[in-house]
Length: 56
Image (cartoon, rainbow, N blue to C red; front, side, top):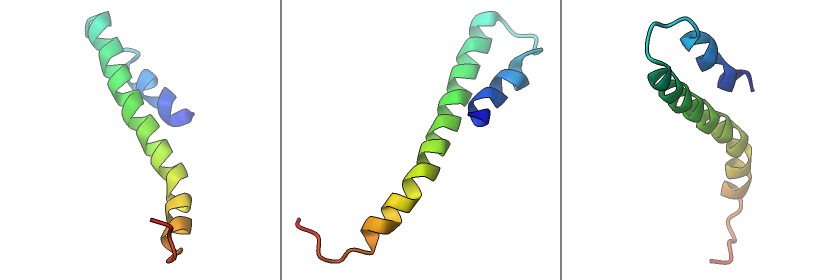
């Protein structure tokens, strides 16, 4: 959750238009969210990678 909030703290006092600030926040938050999802996904990938008898 902190990784999603960090872009807001970084952009809080920047001197750019509000719309550009919101767009930058959205982009940085999306990147942070995908990083979090990747960290959650890694154990599952390792679990399924060790299985050799897959049905497909």
